[in-house]
Length: 116
Length: 112
Image 1 (cartoon, chains in turn purple, brown):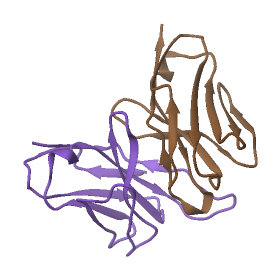
Image 2 (cartoon, chains in turn red, green):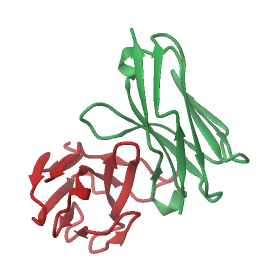
Image 3 (cartoon, chains in turn cyan, purple):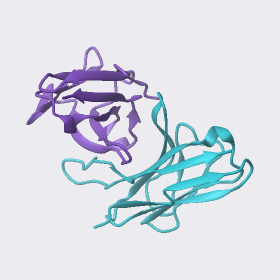
């Protein structure tokens, strides 16, 4: 059972380039999230999805787009990378429902992105 | 939105001593408070959580306390061991909202 898998693990981009980060989960979870982690700022929510075909903005959505065409995949896109987007990106998923509500977030191992 | 503050940002303890990390939250509607541990090069992993109908929860060497009136919750690690060295994050959310707001993290170092 792989859990949450992020691809790639490392990437260096030049300013203005575009890229897509892939998150795949094999736990049939409904909810998926993209966070960025910066020193001294913890984990900040970029975008999230409450189910296949849905997306919503989080705390810091500017400069990013997302898509959830399949339940198991959540893609994060950077259309025109900027140095301010240098960060470690984490994907997470949460199952839906259950009694009591099952609320544990399962995280991937992260993608370290550097924009030069 | 929810604002979670976490202190201290770094904590160094002697092996066998206790470690305490404190968090405050701003939204009185929040009713779910998990703690995550992040080891070097890995994603965060849930270690313990507490819901607002409980004041304290314990799991072996770790415990969490919640003061809803003060909007304050804490993580206590007793008899610290080298494997407790990691970054710890507190978080808060409304249970059926499924959106976690995280604190800035505490880097815990256990000295042998």
